[in-house]
Length: 200
Image (cartoon, rainbow, N blue to C red; front, side):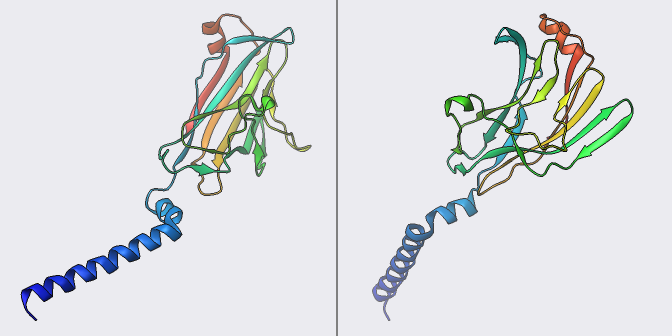
């Protein structure tokens, strides 16, 4: 075999390998991309601060979460945000609710905005505090055996995860407490209603 024949054989082998790779990508491209660069979901607190909004003539303050995918070129599909565990401390007694998966509401979900596949960050509702009322988690439903709200003097630790068809985020753990004081001043309110990130 002379040098020219040897190079022709090498080129034929390269063509066969490239052809096989293209065939694999054509058939299993999504799986290969997911394996090489899977989506990476993360849930984070949008802000500890809350702003006063007037809803149905009631002053209300909302807390939001941000769900992000650090690999936006590989979308996470079927994404939902869940409360997986709640610990409530009231007058020294601790109640633990292994909630399983209670879904939280996406921002503006009442208007049909329910993103299930995305790359860019999306906003999810965590809960709201109503003047003269309680802080209520923004879950789609409340199981009969589970308390998803707090009043003055109650502390609640919430475990949250974003779960998709093809990926799951690490848990975000938040500790929420309220001394019962309401103020229209954001700085004052940030001291009476506290949100601490325990783990992320």
